[in-house]
Length: 121
Image (cartoon, rainbow, N blue to C red; front, side, top):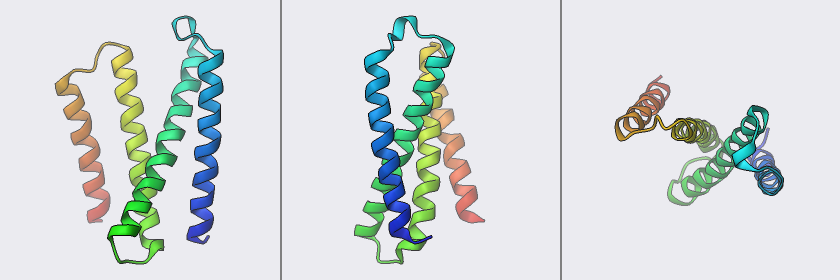
């Protein structure tokens, strides 16, 4: 698939997740939310963070690096997925009052090692 098609799909995903997040926050009371509603919130949040950071990462790489866009897209999407996962895990840990400085640093270290492993392969 062409890079422009992938970027357009990410933009559509960003728009849909933004609209879904807006309506979700308007309709759901966070203090009385069920497990399904909390799961839906975290899925919408992951989708929004993933699409936003992928587009932003691709745009910044396109501006500051002089390589082919097709090589930048894969790493931008991979890092967007990792960033979305780390943000959602941190929010889940924060909701359970488990997130501390050391837990957060360990979480960042694990995902940094995953990225280093994937890049070095």
